[in-house]
Length: 310
Image (cartoon, rainbow, N blue to C red):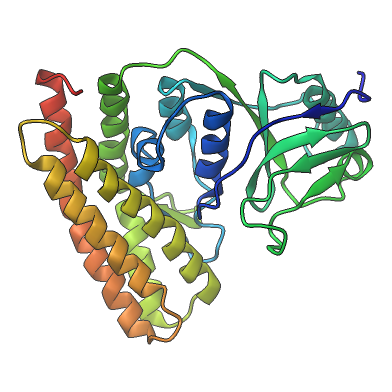
């Protein structure tokens, strides 16, 4: 495989708390898909997701099945595909195989690295890969570059994986929102928790979040970061339903207010100067409002079945 060609991608990654969504936003802009932040968060259904690690560690917002989100992103005109190899994922053969795939990509495909954050490849030369820095150069969880040699030798963040983002045929807004609401309602109905999982998704995530805060034994940074990510997504949802829900019902206004209230409460819980009991109270209030959102989203979904959304 020829690894000598240099490629430069004219792209940027917004400084959102969710680097998964900001990587998608960077790719969308690169392919001239003009989606606003609220549109990306809601029409992908990311707005309805919540994942909490058992002890509130900061990996909670990252370690969950993003496939429903990727499926909805495809209806928005972007196809997400993970790179795979036939070799053991811990072997150098695996990493060489992935590097060959990376170097075979052209300007028609955007690449995202999954390390401690999601970062887009913005340049490649004969020796290194260079990445977008959504939060600037001073945040240690993002890396500016990775040499081919270090990649092959495994001298990089553990668990580094890769996916590509390429343009595809999108769907109408009505179809996109229908897909999103189907996924969102499913997220709110997901109440079963496997015994061997250290992660809680959906309604059980809120319950675990409150329980750990009330216990006083939890990862303080992880709680703060979960608040930042999930508060951001709810705030984007509030903006979307206020602006884009143009049906004859008042469901959009109702949901907008609910999501904005949840975002305010979750953000308030991130305050590092308040007590654990105060944090737990904020998250409990947010949980109670979210329990009502699922029903409102169900009504919106049913409305779309009989009315055209513009």
